[in-house]
Length: 119
Image 1: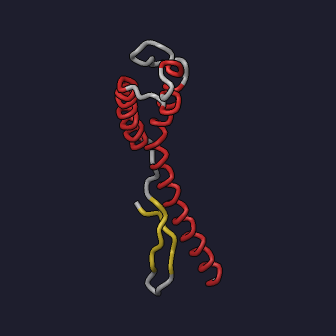
Image 2: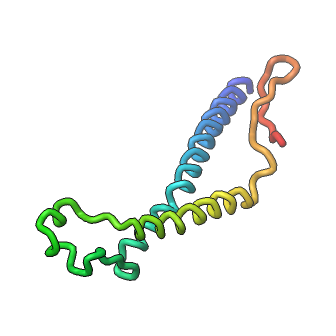
């Protein structure tokens, strides 16, 4: 019976490490998902920013086809949409129902380890 308890404890410890890794992945995803979505949306033809000269960017200057172009207006719009959307995403994730605690290991009176639900 003691061998089964030790195996259960090892499985529980591995599960706790995996849960921590999944939380880290979730937080990183929550930070990057809104910015990725907005960037993808702005890269479509639905939203199009023209260069200030009004001409085609690839023919207006020989160097522009190699250097690309930067639009301050597009950057401002991207920030105006991305920052609030990221904040809303993080706040919304905080409002989701969470577990009423997590599994932990507690040492018994004789030194044995027990899995328990911690609040």
